[in-house]
Image 1 (cartoon, helix red, strand yellow):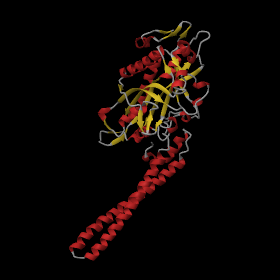
Image 2: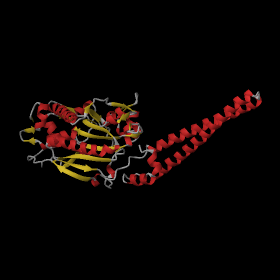
Image 3: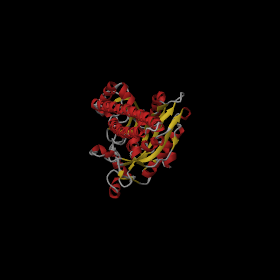
Image 4: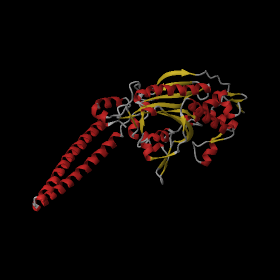
Length: 423
């Protein structure tokens, strides 16, 4: 969440910045500052009463020594009244602070200056295009038909077992899935990311820490009895490893990678663009997460983008990289770059990765800090990226590598799959 300091120091900057995300921050900012002023006034009054209590308590001792019991009893009554009033003030202060924090978490992160203006995905900025041109055979099939033809992913069986959006991977389809996970993890660890295997259910505090709660409850699967949430991305449990942590200078950089299944309700998703692997409720994804000092976070972001790009290039897929406009960014992000693959069979771009810098927004919610050289604690910056989300990677691999004799497996994956063709 945004820090109280920036809201106090430059409220107009916050209001102007959040307008780029099409969020009207003025009413919230004004309410926060009003509650903050009230909270501080109550604290000041409470501090004055505490000083009076101490003074009166000292007087009671002196009066008792002088044998002035009646005066001492009166002073005790005054102290009791001061304590009662102080308790009222502290309760009012705490209520104001609670309401203030509830208002602050309603505000999204401020986009950085590089974020372009825009309302929707149509306004995102293409910053790079790469990969080979795709030349498909005549009568090329979309991936959902290829999955059925070669019996590698069964969408109907998934509906029977669970429901739409929960496919069953079979035979070479299952092996391809496992091969991609291992390939991505190996590439990430070779790039210096430490592999972790986190839980795939998290508590509400973890959801709050990374900004999924209270913003995205409708998109998350919730186990009501235990109040746990199925992870929508490995970002949530991995970043929460650092919740309530104070790092030292020598601890940087923190670079972690993890594979998890991901669960998203995707409420409201329908139509031809969600067919097959294009939009699922359960899918596999490998994630990279970094924690950096503020002055290093944008260099780290560039490194992450280059790393994800290297994965796409190794798979030999056509792609472009987008810098998202203000209107298409997530609630928590300061800047996001999306990777999309070109599906020649579907004639559309398929998103496979988002790489984001959250600056101090998540760290403030997580109480994630570091101790600088002067011994003062500062908020860290957090970053994450998909490396990669599997469903649309699989879709593009199947569609772009189809031939009349079968689907050719990219050479880098063959040591992982154990076969070079699906037929």
